[in-house]
Length: 263
Ligand SMILES: Nc1ncnc2c1ncn2[C@@H]1O[C@H](COP(=O)(O)OP(=O)(O)O)[C@@H](O)[C@H]1O
Ligand SMILES: [Mg+2]
Image 1 (cartoon, protein in one colour):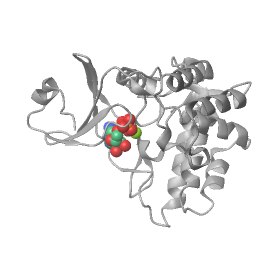
Image 2 (tube, helix red, strand yellow):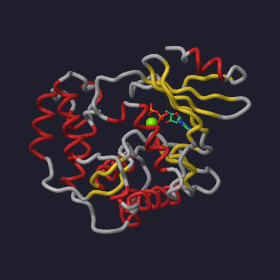
Image 3 (tube, protein in one colour):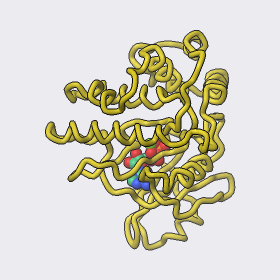
Image 4 (cartoon, helix red, strand yellow):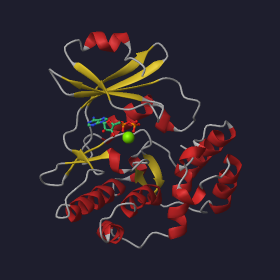
């Protein structure tokens, strides 16, 4: 396990540092307890083109989303130490959506996820400076496949054993002709949404490095995929009903789940 940069350790000598991630996404995350409750995220240069691997992208997106009606951690500070970029945020209280909620809590959690997603997607898309349309993300996916950066041992079951070339061919064959662009989180998984365990209201949306203008199905694909993997009765249908609008096209959802395999 890598150690935090000395410059950051020296800055918070009275905090207890505990490691949170193993750097699977390329970033290392620590939780700091003590005089304040903070999170520190550090990552060096990544061979990926995707913004989700760049801590600087997360810094600017977190700052942008703050004050727009969606709770996000406050950026306490950010900067560069040698070859590494770092982000310090306040800790968001609450439990991840992935928590083992009681049967009584589940409907409120699903509703809170739908309300959060609808509110995010209703932000004025033209005001969002981050382009995550397919011209950007499919190019980054192609680069990741050709550069040998895919984690082929961690594919969805339906694609287990596929090669990078097979994934890329499927991506190109199923790419939608148009995009219904909204402000998307871009990595809207259960771990990245925190909720108050008492009220099941969202306390924070975190891990914002992939936020930007993308087809709404980019978010809906990941979140409905997560909901489908629970034993929460009727969760996908409840979520989509509360999110509102026409039912998303299953082929488009499948495409965005495939796209996620590249990152
Ligand atoms: N500001 C924060 N408040 C609360 N928990 C956080 C915060 N930042 C990170 N975490 C915790 O650390 C985990 C990893 O951080 P995250 O930014 O999601 O990194 P990764 O890119 O590795 O998914 C999160 O799933 C969450 O449990
Ligand atoms: Mg995360």
